[in-house]
Image (cartoon, rainbow, N blue to C red; front, side, top):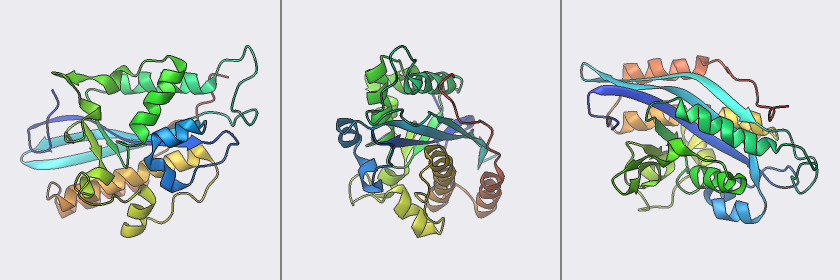
Length: 245
């Protein structure tokens, strides 16, 4: 079982951002990124997934957070308005889902950090995995009868910034764009490139997570500065995934 923020030990950490595209290749309105079902019904597919991987360690009563690099998995633009592939071609979205599943399995019980991921990122990934018949084993770990990454009130597995900051439904949650504006990170949706949007989103979620830990009094000011500087300097390690072409 993974450690919580206040327990000794360490674990893997990943800030995750899924960027969908509509059948015509356009990006959805940001307000629709709170509703995976709405996007699925309109034929949206995964355009790119960005994730910033790192670690979370409590050492000598101090919490240390390290994000190491931003990685991006992206698929080519749809070949027609339906997003379908030519007959006989492998579906690059299916290959992306498989690659993401393999990447997450290489982490050890990671804490997954999202912004709105309870209503969008994780359900949308699961819908698209269902469409392709691909397993997402790493996101379906269980504790008793619970699927822990889908448990709303257990932030030791899935820390949804939007939901946590809004008090788990006590107020209307702010989306990633709103939170970025609140803390001065600027706008994220200024690009039509899903890979660039996924990369920016993962970096922003990493920074917002650090700020939220500071608000929760889990991170001191010096560690916040060190961790935030490291996020700003993170290399973009992975080239966009090309669907195996």
